[in-house]
Length: 101
Length: 503
Image (cartoon, rainbow over all chains, first blue to last red; front, side):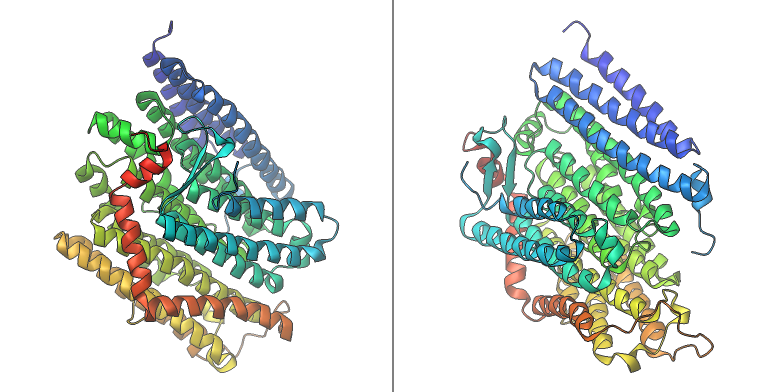
C-alpha cells in the first residue's frame, strides 16, 4: 500500500470534523445538508482505506452503498428544504421556530 | 435459497409497500391491502418467534454465500421477540390509522411509507452485520422522514428539520465508528467482530469506537444528553404516526445498544457499561422531570417516553443476567404501553381538537371506558403492581441493589415516582376536571361514526389485553426474557450459528 493507512485516517478525521462544524454551526439548511454529506464522505474514505489495508473488497462495496444511501438522503433533505422555502421564503432553520410550544 | 423464517418479516412489508405503490391511483384500497400486509407481518413475526423458541438462534445467508462474505440475517430470542412486537404494533397502528389518518395523507402514500418503515425496523432487529444495521437504520429513517412530513403543516416542517438533521448526524457518527472498527478489526460481521475484538482485549482504540457507537445509538434511542430532538418532533405528526414512532423507533436504538454492547464491546465493561449506567440514570430523572412541567399532552408523553428509555439502558449498564432480563422485559412492556398512551391521546385530540391540557377535561364523563384503559396503561407505566411495568422495574431495582449501585437504584425509584406524578397530572387535567366552560368546541373536533369508533378502540383494547397478560401472568414472559439475557451474556451460540460452525 503506497499511501499509509494512518494518512487516510487523518484525512478522514479532518473531513469528518469539517463536516461536523459545518453541520452544527451554519444557519442555512442547505449548508447543514452539505455538512452531513461531507461527514458521510469522510466515513467512506475510512472504509476505502481499510479495504486497501486488508486487501478485501468489503470496504469498497460499502463505500458504493454509502453513496447510494447518501443520494436518497439528499433527495429527501432537499425536498424538505424546498417545502420550507416555499412556505417561509427563507432557508434559515430559526424562522420555523414556533413561539407557543 | 430456502425460505427461512427470517426472510418473511422483511419480505412481507416490502411486497406490501410495492403492491400499494402499484395501487397509487386507488388510495381507498390502500387501507385494506395494507391491513392484510400488517397481519401478514404479525404472522411472520410470530412464526419467527416460534422457530427461535424451538430451534434456538436462527440464521439466513442471503444468496447462500457463507459468512463472513455474504450478508447474514440472524435472530436470537431478543431479536425474535422484538420482531413479533413490531408486527403487533404495526397491526395495531394500521387499524387505528384507518380512522385516524385523513384522506389526503392516505392519497400521498401514508400506508406504503408505514410498511417500508416496518421493514426497516424488522431489518434492523435481524441484521447480523454491522454495516447492514446502518443500511436498515437508513431505510427506517427515510420512511419516517416521509411519515413525519406528510401533510406539510408548519409544525411538521419544523419538527422534520430537527429530526432529520440530528438523526443524520447520528448516522454519520455511527458510520464513522463502523469505518474505524473495520479499519482496525478487519470485518463487518458482528459475530466475526466479537471474536476479533475479544482476541485484542481492551484497548483505548476499541473504547473510543465504543464511545462513537454510544453517541450514535444514544442519539437514536434518545438517551440523555442527546434526546432533545425527540420531544421537539414527536408532537407534530398525526396521532397514529406519533404512536408508531414512540413504540418502535427509539427501541431500535435501544436494541442496537443491547446488541453491540453485549456482543462486541465487552472487553472493558467497567468503562463502557459504567458510562451506559450514568447516562441511563440521568435520562430517567431528567426525562421525567421534563414530563412533569409540560402542558401539551403529547409532549408529556414524549418526555415520559424519553425517561423510560433510561430503564431499558439501565438493564444493559448493570450487565448482570437479572438486569438484562429485566431490561428486555421492560423494553417489550414499554413498547406496548407507550403506544397505548399515544393512541389514547390521539382519540382525545380527535374528539376535542385540543392538545393543551388546560383546555381539555371531562373525559371521564364522556368516555368512561377509554378513561379506564388510560388508567390501566398509566398505572402500568408507573409500575403499580400487578401491571406489567412493575415486574420489569422490580427486576431492574433488585439487580441494581445486588450490584450495590445505590445511586442508580435511587434514580430508578425517583423516576418511578415522577412517572406517577406526571400520569396523575394527565389524569387530573384530561379526564377528571370539568371541561373549561368558556372554551367552545373547535370546528375540527369530530364525533366519530360507529365504524370509526370500532377501528379506534380495537387496537387500544387489544394492546391493553397483551399488556395485562404480561402483568398478570409474568412468568412465561419473564422466563423468555431470562433466556434471551442468557443468550446475550453467553454469545457463543449466536456466534457459532452466524459463522456456520467454524470457530
